[in-house]
Length: 225
Image (cartoon, rainbow, N blue to C red; front, side, top):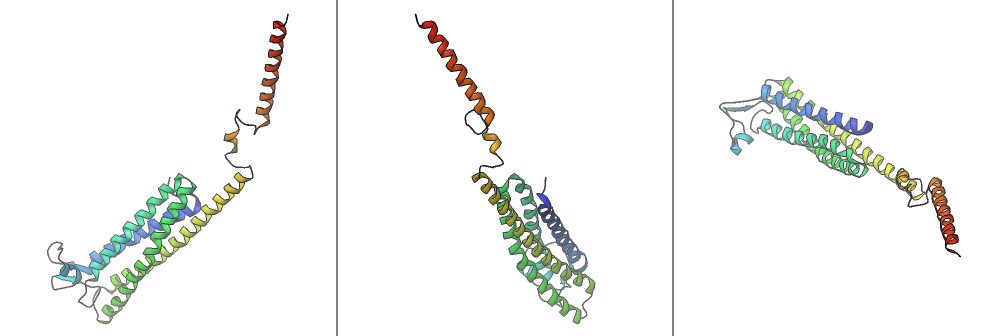
């Protein structure tokens, strides 16, 4: 039930890839780049800065980019899930398809600069950490590579959403033109005994009126002395 046509299938595929890449970033950060003593702490200083008990290997030290990566991933997952759900509602018809494509375009247009910014930050601080010989260079490289991949995937989502809106608009214009020309795809539903769109109804109506007039004439003759 997901998607509609090739564009819908492509949108679903992109959303699934975005979700997979976001989960991969979170796993790499947690398993290879972020270590802390104790449980989660909700203090702003714990989330924003590193310490001896809160180590993030995405930077040479200072800013806690691991927590920032978690925030970026959370927003990305929410957006990808929303984009995936819109493919379910796009099955409701042309109007809902246009609305869902507009929502997809809005989400994708926001997530492209979101992931672009995250990729730039991860790359810049990753290069600094590599220059400072901070361990786990491969994990840092995987994070910024996946962030750039997310930027590309969301850019493709923008193009797919634009193409979907254009396709829905083209179909709607075609149906409107056909309707104005009397060739609507729904014209068969107007073929009823209450109009003259079909010759079979005209013939039946003429036969009924003819039989009725003959019956009235016969009754009139019977009444005449």
